[in-house]
Image (tube, rainbow, N blue to C red; front, side):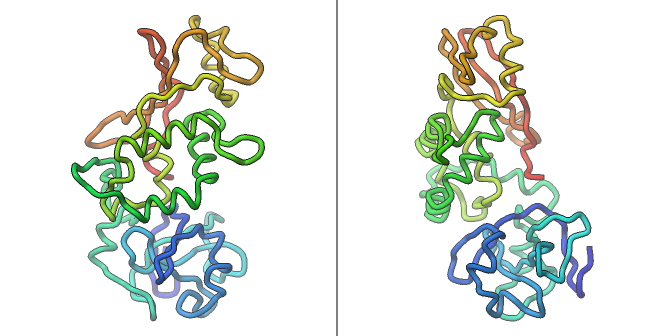
Length: 263
């Protein structure tokens, strides 16, 4: 897609960073920037990529004269410098958020040894926990939020396991806000899902299994055998899917698969 001399790749990036380092959802752009320069120029919205720090442009949305042909509202790297914003073509080209980067996004799932906790990731999770819990629930097929908007027990267990297993210890270039829900479920150990509320398709899948068909009470999953939920990559080196799986006794049941890449 070519817009006003800037070639922009269409990729689903939903977060932006400000010069002072704050990372926010694109829906908060006007509130956080007050349309000040350099973020708002010639009725176009600009910011920084939360991962590589190079300039991005927000595409679509109301009152924005740069529109998406698909109707989506998203952010994407600029191919040329924007006045007042940092621009680094080498960092951009290595960024997992950059569409022209082949499968570099798969490096998000790689684990390193001896890394310190990434403070930016920790802050982001704390400030966006309800939103992340909702997205985790959508990925695993169990409610991530209670009716009062607070995280459910299954999310709390996954987040605790994620942190305990060094999930916060990532390289700066692995801080990709859109992927954090996937990182949480993939790095968490098997967690108990007793009492969790499955989505309809997951409930139906559970009830089709002879060993679990009597495990739904009301809307909750209450098996009479120890049952845990685990999320695993289909390929450690070159992942394309995350498998959502139940473990019970000596058996297992694949509930669903989700794309390892944010679409």
